[in-house]
Structures are given as structure tokens and as C-alpha cells.
Image 1 (tube, one colour):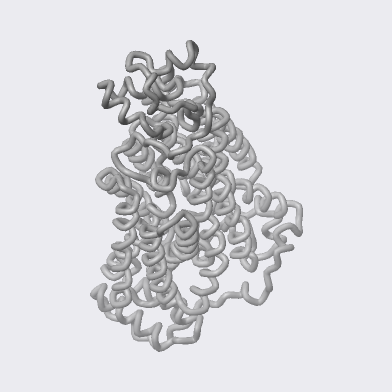
Image 2 (spheres, one colour; image 1 turned 135 degrees about the vertical axis):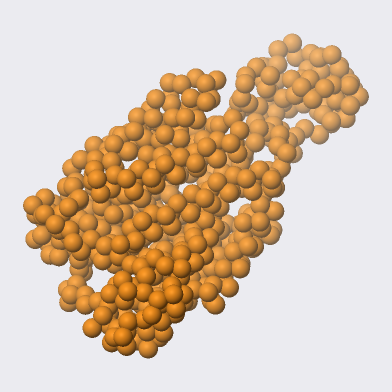
Length: 556
């Protein structure tokens, strides 16, 4: 009896139907980019200083320029290239409306030395130096409330983590297509609600909800396209689906530049996603899932549709279509199995660390560039563009060189780039940007390659569980990253880079402790996984890769 892969070999493994479905589903992958890293533009913190009543009238009466007004009334703003904490969060305890203030030196009659004037926290809000707006400028998330920006991004990653536990079951129970449509609808609505949220608390809740469902729509799209194509195209299609996410990053930079106001930007990236509901008529249910649910008639109908769109005749034995036998279901996976033997225990701990570190490095470098760069939009664009050569490197090296060496070197390069950035003067912005982009490229390679390595190190019956447990550390890393970056920068701007450097170098070193899986038979039992270095062939790679990815794909 033929399987889905057998039929696809005859009607087309990547024909017109698969190409159309791939392009449509790639739009979903691209649309997740603003949710994942939109904080760079939605939560941008511009230069700011305390708003003082009476200063505007005094400046107008004295005929001051904007620079003179700042030099006369704001704490030490003119003494440094970057505003200090004092100039941003403290103000002179002075009544600027009193008549004794002189236009030449307004504070001279009060004290001969400005440092003797009493200081108080900003009492009347802040003035922001920006052409647009962000959640920071609207809700005054600066100084004592700056941590709320970190929480805003952490809620998205918390949503990813919680969604991974819920949506995977939903997709396996009710189907990939229904999961895709349901999560897309909620993602769009929660995005719009975020844009019109009246206060910070409601905005936070809508953002959490968006994180919970948006990853589900990305996962569902990933699962559908990998289940539509033949085994020979599965890995390339999976990688290119993630490249579509990079296209979304590039597009986000342009949209954010054109729309500098955060509410309108949030609407611009959320409203178009409602059109993904039209996929109800253009993207069918996965025939593999239908077969797994014993809905053979519907699966045959989908395969006939694929054959028709590809301009091929369905095989004569199509009505005998059956699901691929999965012997792994005869064994029940257990969390304890991941730590049962010495090598599997070592692999599990190393992979958990790799997932955590690559999430911190990937998101952390994006946030650090956004907080320290010169041109926010160009820096973000440059760092997004390096993800294209990262995907090319993966495609070229994965079967020629292997997995472990490229992944380890990428981690080491990322860590080294972060440490070198510490010693680069801020004036050499181009060099800092180049090193940050190099580190970003390394983190991207690791983020995509660690998924495949994770799949290849465990026996079949526990493979999906191992992927879920280990990759959960990726979402947990994303929850802590905003606090690591922005709070450490308050202590010292380069402090996060030291953390990134240590994480990258440690991860690179630990990667060498994993066995190379290129050309090695995928393990079926715990004993085979324990003695993985002795394996030789890997004929079943594509089939197993699909099974893993449909359970939990690489983090976006």
C-alpha cells in the first residue's frame, strides 16, 4: 500500500501546488517578525529630560535657542555626548517662574555653583527628543519605570512558552489547518487590541495573548508546508520557511521608518494578517494528519487535488493510501528517559544550555544594537540582512562539513565578536555594527542548526519530548533577555556584551562535546543513542526530521 511520500514521488514532490502553498505560508512566517522583535521600534527609548513648568515661558521671554534652554535648565546635558541618568531622571528644585531669574545665567542668583542646588526626581513628566512615539514616550516608561519595557517583551516570550504547551496539542488533536486559522484570527485581533489599549496593563495582557497564539500560527504553517512536500525537499523547505521570517525583519525596518508612531505601526503590522483567514479556501488540511486520524477519504481527496494542480495523474493505487507505520508509538516516552544514561544525560544538559544561550544571544544582540546604535532603522536592517548568508551557510555545510563544527564555530564567533565590541570606541560605530552583525549571523546559524542536532541525538520514541523539553529553554531565555540587556546597561553599557561573550564561548566549547551526527544512523533505542558515535548510515533522516519538526519546530 502506498504512503504519502510514495504518492508524492509520482505526482510531484515540489510542484505547482507545493510552490503556491509555500509562498502563502511564508507570508505567515514573515508576519511573526514584528511580534518577535518589534520591541526595538515599539519600545524605543529616545533621549529625554524632565519637563519643568515655566521653562518654556522663560525661554521665550529670554529668546534662548533650544540648545541654550537645555544647557541652562537641564542637569549637565551639555557636558557629555550622551545624557546621563541625572539629566534624564532628576531636575533642579527651582521655581522657574520667579522674577529674580536672569536670562544670562538663570541659576547664578540662586547659587554660585550648580552642584549645590537641591535635586528632585522629575515631577511633571518628560520631554522626548523624537519625531514619533513609542510605548515609552506615551506611558513614560523611563527612569523608575524603565523595567516595564523589559516586561513588555518578556510577556511575548512567556506567551511563546505557554503557547508551545497548548497549541501543539491543539494542532495534533484538531488538525493543522484549523489550528492555523484559529491562531491567526486571535493573533490579528490581539495585535489590534494592543494598538488601541488605553493603558499599560491592558496592553501587557494583549501582548501576552498575542505571544501565546502567534507562535502557534508559525508552527502550524511550518508543519503544513513540511508535510506537503516530498522527503527530498523537506529540509530545504524548512530552512527557507525560516528565511521568510528574515524577509519579515527587513520589511519591518522599512515600515517602522515610514510609520514612526507605535500605535499606527502596530496596526500596520497586525491588520493585514486578518487576510490569512482566506487560506481556508487555498490551503487544504495535511494529508498526513488526515491519515493519522483514519480520515482516509479526505486524505485521498487532498492528494488528488495536489496531483491535479501539479498537472499529473494520480496513481492507480491511490485509494489504498495508508499512513506510514510508526513503531515508536509502541513505547511510551518519559521525562526520566532524557537523563537515564550518561551520554543522553550529558546531551540533554548541553542542548538545554545551547537553546538558552542562542536565544539570549540572538535577541540580546538585536536589543543591544537598538539601544546603542546610531541610526536605529539602518542598524536593524543591516543586522537582519546577515541572516540571508547564514541560511546559505547552513544549506552548504550541513551535509558537506557536518553539524557540530559549524555550530560550535558559530557560537565561538558570536562570543568573540561580543567581547571585541567592548574595546571598540563608540565613535567607530561602523566597526561596532559590523561585529554585531557578525555575532547576529553566528547566533542565527546556531538557532536553526541546534534544532536538527537535537532531533538526531535521541531515540525515536522520545525524540519529540526531547525537542519540547530542550527547546523550552529558548523561550525561557527570551523571557530573561530584556532584563539582562537593559538593566545591565544601566550599570555599564558594555556589561551585557561580557555576558554574551561568556555565553557564546561557553556554548561553543560545550558543542564540541556532542557527537557528530552527519552520516550516522538515527537511533531507535536508548542503547543506540548511548552509542551514537559508532553509527554509520542515515537513510531515514528526512522522515524522522519531519516527525520532529511537526512536534516542535525551531524557535523563531
